[in-house]
Length: 219
Image 1 (cartoon, rainbow, N blue to C red):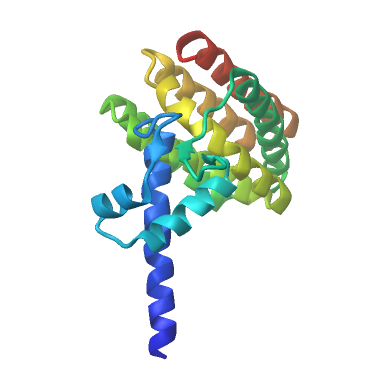
Image 2 (image 1 turned 120 degrees about the horizontal axis):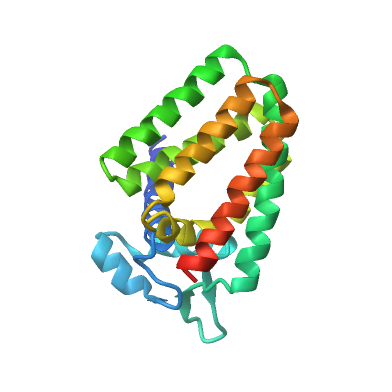
């Protein structure tokens, strides 16, 4: 029993380290090209090197960190071409998920979506970009869950790792949050009307606008 508890505790610690490092990468605190040192990170986070190593291994698998033959570990860089292609593919996936969700969404799920959009509006008033991004994720995650297609969810999650670093900077552009909120409201209304075609179209437009904003203001 003790051994099992130790393993579970270790897994939780490794997961916590992973979440902290991923958050710093996607928010740009750890910038592309930044070198990662197991010893330095272990010292800063007050943990042993083992959970650091496991967390980095997971980040490598997700494409957020890369390793070189000399075992040097750095935060991965995303090329402009890769970013555009990933966003285009995600737009198709988000559109498909919304199209399916429009046919399946019920009153309880619609209420949850409306509450999320209300939260997004409040965070704009408070100028709280970090919290806005979190509820933005909840909006899209809820639509994916309503859609229920595990393959769409899995592929979209993998693609998301390449986007988050750009999105945080993109939403910092003056005026973008307001337009982003309007786009989310439009998607929500299409789901309320159970209009699959409109949900698909508006979701793709939302991602296209994201691409335009990133290319214009961030890259």
